[in-house]
Image (tube, rainbow, N blue to C red; front, side):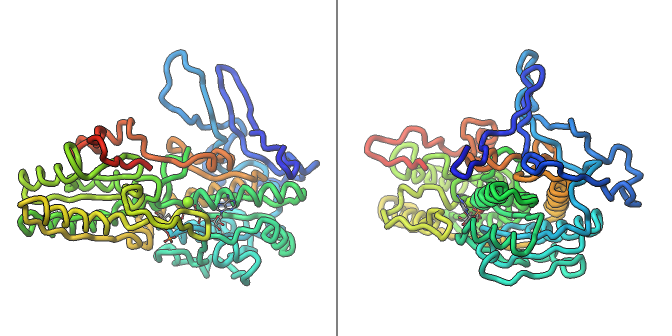
Length: 462
Ligand SMILES: Nc1ncnc2c1ncn2[C@@H]1O[C@H](COP(=O)(O)OP(=O)(O)OP(=O)(O)O)[C@@H](O)[C@H]1O
Ligand SMILES: O=P(O)(O)OC[C@H]1O[C@](O)(CO)[C@@H](O)[C@@H]1O
Ligand SMILES: [Mg+2]
């Protein structure tokens, strides 16, 4: 039990052969005699013809799909989708949507599809948008959302509701939810947001309110665990190609040209790694998870000199969180949510490389630094992220209507699932540098491993 008297133990269901379902809470866990109603989709012209449209209560999705003959069946998550029975009458639903944290392609699509899903699948008419993130619950007016008002928002980047960091005041937020008689809360955001959503769910449960809390994971950095990948990630990687192409063109157009591109990735280097793998023009990819050093044998300067001698040009991609410990010390600063503010590793590297080759080497280099940081996340979602965002939004709607709460909708092994908040918030997803994907990346660039820094050299770790 936590200090609010809420059972923090996971809802585990064990089965034969080592099967474990890490289930999500349901309103009936704390509201006795919760009434149920037939799902309106049963008489929906589009869906009623679909065989087995409704998800069986027993359907679960395994977290690990590669198994051995004698291995236990392992952890499973509840399969997302519409249920035969729902726990809300359509006319009684008062839903709200909020977006928090940094921008991500697809945010507007998720908003749109929650509104349209509630409206067209469940006949829900009352949906409001909370402006400017968590703080908007208690400091802003809400906006009415209808299928008409959201009809073309998916074609625009950003979030039509606005977003913010910081300002999470659980009690004020839940007071507001209670005052407005909201009974479904859809919270779209990253790891910090899902922690905030979990706090809201716990307080709602402590008060015994019939309010379903559904999270939709958003992260351009792909740093949320368990899920296959986050919506908007593919779009960001695609947009990063434009910067890498430009760096390559600049680098190949001069003698000893170096193109340096900084990409987002505060603690996780997925964007840099995938953008490098996709491009094939990158000679070196540096991420927060993999230490590197500049000077001496096996260092970056040596590798740059080698590549320039071999090819006459090179492209370096650096994730914004890489190499932070190498940069000159400065006062630790945080943003409003408590995230560490990073120093500009790209700018620092470009100065260091120029300085090194001007002083220490006879090589005359030309370095162009490209920083597309916000450009890769402020664009609309591409086609596949639009479809992905749509399915996530619909899963969240089906889950809340069925009475599930305290969950994040997420794709696990290609299937939509409901994941308990604590699974999402307990750790961050990182590139595992002993995994095959990083090895594939290394074999595509043939960059040094930076594993053996010379004595006295700082090797950067996170
Ligand atoms: N531990 C926490 N408990 C309650 N609320 C939190 C917690 N951590 C963060 N939040 C709130 O969640 C919101 C978003 O957090 P944050 O700015 O870290 O972004 P995020 O959701 O992690 O997204 P991203 O990092 O991908 O931009 C903020 O309003 C912040 O106050
Ligand atoms: O400048 P902002 O909006 O705080 O966001 C920067 C951070 O947000 C992220 O895009 C995650 O949303 C990180 O990659 C980046 O460090
Ligand atoms: Mg975050």
